[in-house]
Image 1: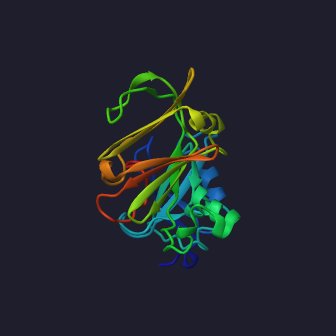
Image 2: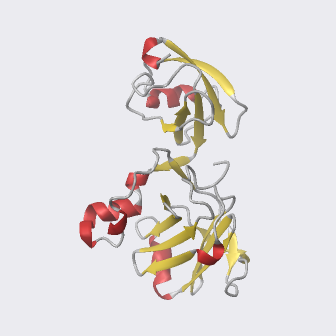
Length: 250
């Protein structure tokens, strides 16, 4: 039954820090109001929250829960599952660096060839911050080894058909992109992981992505440094299926 036909919705909430929790809320609540009401039962403070929902089974299409529209307007049904992401910000396909480049530069964009591609599914791409990870310079093709490096936490990604691309841009990581212009850029790919390290003088920056959503082909994956603009990781999928998230369990 559609949400607008009900006054109260029984929903199951999935949050990494808690066991699944069943709660009921009015269908007239907006996504923003729902976030605030969830803080007490989920024992959350002022962390940034991102919500997505699925009607029916958990294998059905996941949709972003918009802040300004009511649950009824967004088609949330009684019995729906709601995923709660904590300390996450949303990177949608239309807001990725690729989309922004095409929007601003049109036919002159480096990514213009993708302008008319099939639209990606509406799922949110989640990007997480975190504590600095440990990596250090190593020989080409060898796994990255440990030493202190500043974690790269601002990046976007997009499913581009046969490839999944990661974009680290000057807008989000200005120091790292400046270092990449004439510093050392190392990338290591494995079947389910990708690691990027940028070194210049005493500065080191690193991005480590484990448990990727699908398998990639390391030998056919590559990276590109666009001086002063971005570093792009282009990962070749082993199977050409749509990725609805970048990493498993996130």
